[in-house]
Length: 195
Picture 1 (cartoon, rainbow, N blue to C red):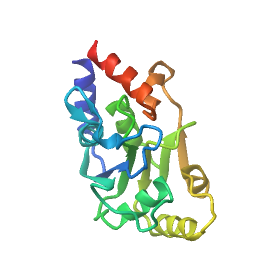
Picture 2: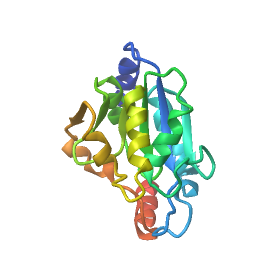
Picture 3: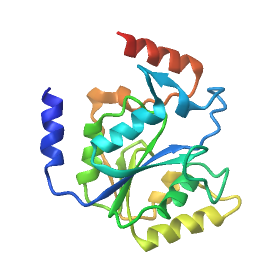
Picture 4: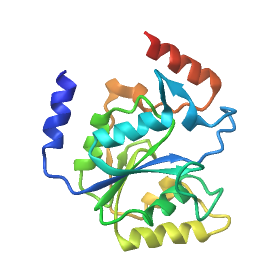
């Protein structure tokens, strides 16, 4: 229960309203089926990631992809999902973005993003999760990058133009940063969660 009490004390801190976004618009080619619908311990990956964002104080939590917000720039990766979500941002100060295929991501890591100042906050060596502030120049930069037909649509390219903060990762929690991309990785994850 130590973790729960830590989460509660961090949640009690005054925090600007946050929106959450689960990116689930990928083609899942290597997995061979929609990753968002994979089930671990009775919950889909999409449900797991929505729950983590809610536990980190995000409200509302949005989902991009086939079952959620549709990309305005289809086929252009995570940046297109983030761009489309900005239209649904409301008056939240910031949005925390997670991939659908990172079920070991700890709520504690999302809370750390939430309480760190910066236009963009992410973990060193990782593109996701990321916290982005709701600012007009960030929207404009997303639009500019996505309008380039043969451009670099990576999150790394995007954040290098922002006043961002790269946080150090907790070395003890290296498995939390693993994505599920293949049936073999999913099977291994299922076995880990069975024990």
